[in-house]
Image (cartoon, rainbow, N blue to C red; front, side, top):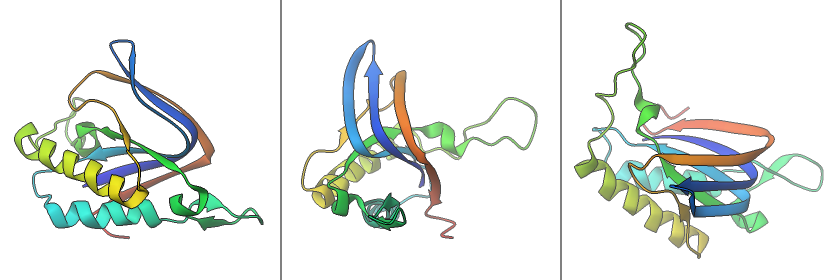
Length: 150
């Protein structure tokens, strides 16, 4: 799994002009799922997202997690995070999991993050043409890959 995590003061997702999810103060998480991903990847990544300390403390240092700031999550599925761009100019997406594998893992991630937060995670709609709006705070943007834990 690969996640692009953005610290935001606000973020929202629209599908066909209708807001499907919106948050203030928290994380916008763009989630890519590849064929090799398993439940263990999802569980590890969910814990990392919830516990990562990228929110400022009283001294302006990144020492606080979502729990510390009572933050929210907007989770968006994004298969394009596994684009292959080495050859040519048209990206390939063969590493991205097909919906029959990706949807159950995406739904499991929603449940796992909801358990961590102790409230619903806001989402987009899997496979839909989504319009994402955000105000990146900082900006702070991280990329986390469960197959390349740096």
